[in-house]
Image 1: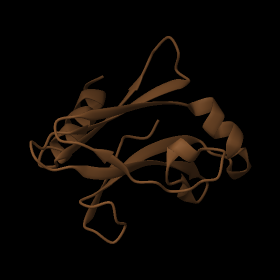
Image 2: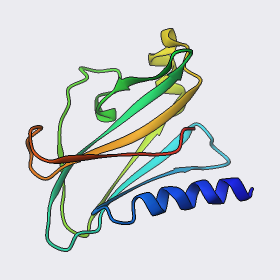
Image 3: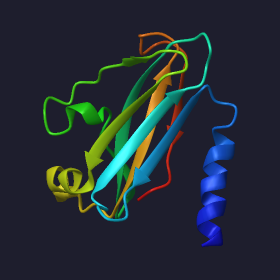
Image 4: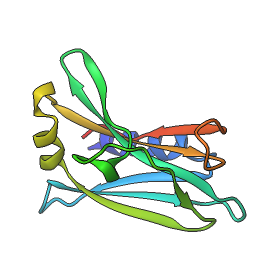
Length: 133
């Protein structure tokens, strides 16, 4: 139990200086449903983000999709705006991800948020990874 709190504390510490915070919440009653929250703590700056997911296979983590909004569809990558002092919440199903990518024999999932200073993939960017599930 102490290790869990230390890992959670490590995530928060790593995000301490970041203008974007990224969280995941798994409801104990419905372990399939994962709620992801991206929060812009800046008072003045709008950032542009996308949430991706990686899967742990026998050879390590592999990228499954760079934008979970396009899961199982066209897999386009779209940057969404996150205005100052606002947040975005997205719910995803672990079962759906496992079903779509079952050929890769995924054992764990790891979510990430990539955020950019402009709505341009060539602008300055950062990535925040969450603890694998």
